[in-house]
Image 1 (cartoon, helix red, strand yellow):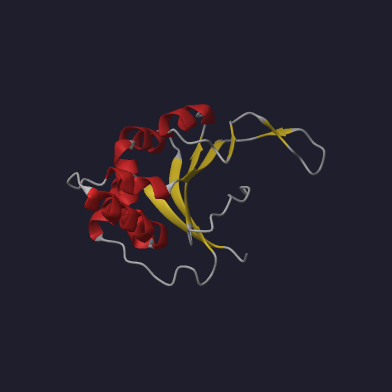
Image 2: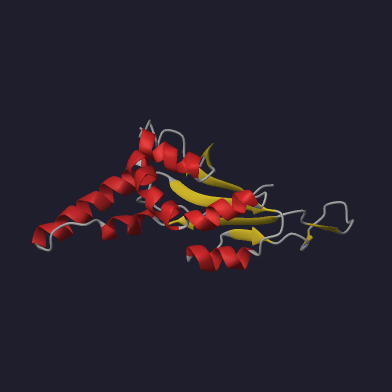
Amino acid sequence: MEARKLPESDSEPFQLSLRIRHPSLDPEELSREFSIEAAHCFRAGDPRASRSGIASVHPESYWLGALNTATWPADVSLPKSRRRSAAEEHLGVVVTRSLGWALSLSTRFFSAHAETLRRIGAEGGQVSLLITAPPGEVSGFSLAPAVSRVFSDLGIALEFEFTSD
């Protein structure tokens, strides 16, 4: 099941995307829940293109949406001052360049949607975080135990895709 390529940003060396497969869930429900426009989606039972010309339908629902890591540092709690905006700006640069930081901050997003993510798993669905990066852009990263615990507790698989362009 190939998804179409997500738009790339000049400032980010990687893209984080939420990918959900489910036996019957309406993708529009997921877009509303996460406040993210789907980059690619379809619903179980919808007609699908066939190379052979034989009519067929999608056997499951699918939803893929890009997470906007650039907006995450905005809610970092720092004292109100001029230094706050400079600190937030610096943190924003670090997050958009550091996969480890972005994964750590993504746990806020996932924790906020924990009930929905657990329901998807309980209903036979699959949730994954797709990390897409050109080779060489991400030389390494560290995943703290607390971060991996959040992904594990919510049943979120991490998928890495290294693109050639």
